Length: 89
Image (cartoon, rainbow, N blue to C red; front, side):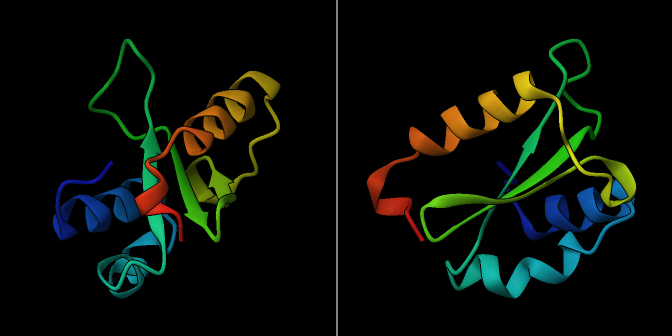
């Protein structure tokens, strides 16, 4: 999970996507953005995902390339199922 607005902006820059423009939505709790990292490179951008309306809404690699890897999609879907009920948007 991003810890600051700066984290979201840096993710957008690293991923070459528009997640940095989601800051207002995130602050207003209309969107929850999270990052998926490789275990061996926890500080390096890998996948950006968005949770909205109780479901995984978007999940992309760098340059908005779609994620089709079933293992990654399973991990992301398991993660959003386990989000605190108070966080459901």
